[in-house]
Image (cartoon, rainbow, N blue to C red; front, top):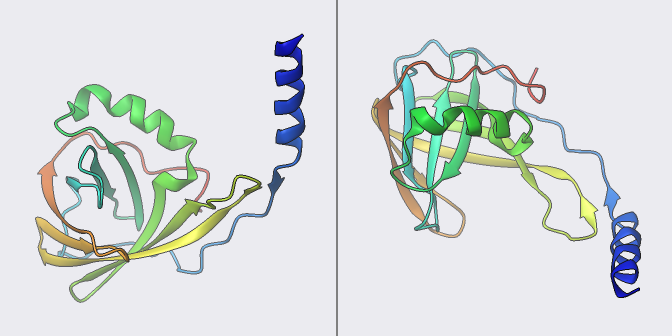
Length: 164
C-alpha cells in the first residue's frame, strides 16, 4: 500500500513539471579553417570548480564543439564510445564556436535549474588562446582552468541532432 502511494505521488509530481521550449542558438555556426587552435585531438583540463572531474573538448572544422566531463586520467580511447553515445542524446554536450583573434567564443545549452520547469537555456563562454596547445578559461564564479591539447585519433563524429 505504501509503495502504491509513493508511485502515485511521483507520477503526480512528474505531471506538474512543465516543459518549456528550448532557447535557440543566436550565434551562427561557421566553418573553422584557422591555425589558432588544433583540431587533430582534444583539449582537456580540470572542470571549473570541480576537483573530481576533467573536461574534454573536441573542436571540429565545421564549427561544432563536443564537450563532456569525466574523472581524471580516464583511458579516453577505451571509454569514448560510451561518452559519445551519451553525448549524442545530451544537448548540453554540443556547442558551436567562432575564433576571433585570440578568443574562442562558444555558445551551447545548459539545463534550467528548476525542479518544476524543464528547459535548455543558452550558455555563452569564451576561452583565451594562449597558443595552439593551451587555452585559458575563467567562469563567472572566478574559477580558472587551463586546457591542454592532446593529439587523438579517431575523433568522435561531430554530427548531432541539436546543431544544424
